[in-house]
Length: 298
Image 1 (cartoon, helix red, strand yellow):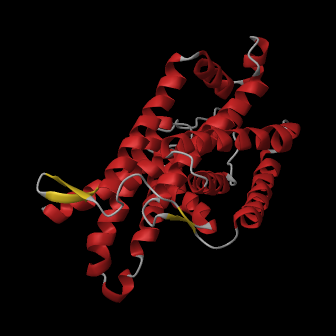
Image 2 (cartoon, rainbow, N blue to C red):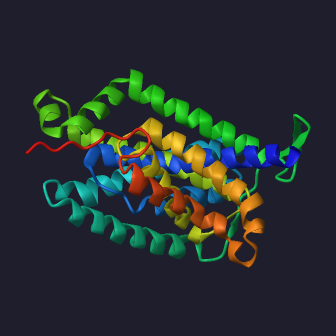
């Protein structure tokens, strides 16, 4: 029972991070119907900015805020300079361009910070544990889960109650109608990319806390979070968050129990398990948990 509780807390902490990454995918997709395959590099950039800020002696919380803002501005610049001129072009052209932007950002990260891992200190002991219902749980897991939960709550409050959130929802429904109503759709798209970049940076920073270092390959984690987008539903933010939590929990439980049960065939099975779940949803429920079922009238 103790082991199950420890794995559950770790899985939920990982699931919150997956939810942050997947929510960035969904926010951009809802706004522009584009998959941003440069999202992983935004995640890496935020983590490296955090490492540089802490190395420069900036207080940890201040460095966190500066890293989030800088990554959000970077994402908004990518949307304004690279993607906005392609409005009206076929969607696959924009998607291919995000792949190019991702590779360019990855190259810039390696040029700026090198290919070697960079340390990321924390104000707390990364090996410290606390007792929860008789189980020893890492403080890292609790902090990651708490920070992610606050960020997710802030996002939904922004979408639900702010003027920007209303504009983002309107633009995601129909950009032409939103323009006719006087909503500055271009600025809304830039703000959407900025919010997605900040979510990616937060996820990258807390992913880096577990090895306590930042690596140039950190962006590949975004691909591990991608099944949450499909399982939750491409146009459902709530479904994506639920799917991120579910897949994070299932991945950690699979690592703790299924890998060993499969013997030699179970080596790293937990890393592909979210994709197994995703393929099951694509076969049985292609619109995801809470996604909108597409209806075509002929």
